Length: 342
Image (cartoon, rainbow, N blue to C red):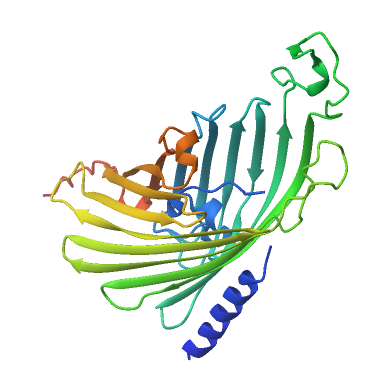
């Protein structure tokens, strides 16, 4: 018998553990558009057989070399077509970061794996996931200027600096893990809540080959509720709370999904979120379903003092998601010869 009190106790424990936890990591404003960077337990958490996702973010273009983030992923739901198959999800994710005069570059490759358990009531599912990652970081000195290269306020590129960092490349192994609960609360609504811990290994980020700089663990908890208001409109409020070292980030808002009587574009969605990290930004969202491809566009409006340096130009974000569902694909039927006696 499913015991809601036990589930609530588990959820309280997750949130308490996350709240006491301690460099910012890759994440997107439209966080549910990139589920594998949001929570490792969401690997394979979709209706269908295969899921493909691409995300791109551009920000701080007027302050320095733009900070660009690109992420692609693919995951599989193993039990989508076989009733007795083990309910697991697996796939891959590749993240790429680039920014600054040092041409800081980071390649992050991970193999997400998850397990999903459906309670006998068929209304509650709990998922656990883990993502081991191999990460390569590098910087370039070609466009950097050091203090001892200036003589009488004039810069000399030919002067060799003693301040240069001894290494310009490093690599390390990282790990993240998470839980996610999904509740079918009624015929018109569903709710999910989860938590994720990133940077479990607390790897060193120092180019001096020491432990002077370590990547702090990032603790996240997120929730989403979807309610069918009318036959053509869903309301989807969601929120995420993140803690990393001394940094805190709270983001909350909602989007509405409009279902259209159109085969090419069956739905459109609009939304807005507020990010409270130093009263950072108001995030506007617009998206649509184009023949099964979910396309999203987001724009961060600066609300903090950074808007002065950025000339009011915020961050731009794009997302593309496609789910292949074998049961919905048209099947080719072979011709059958008519019997001669008919």
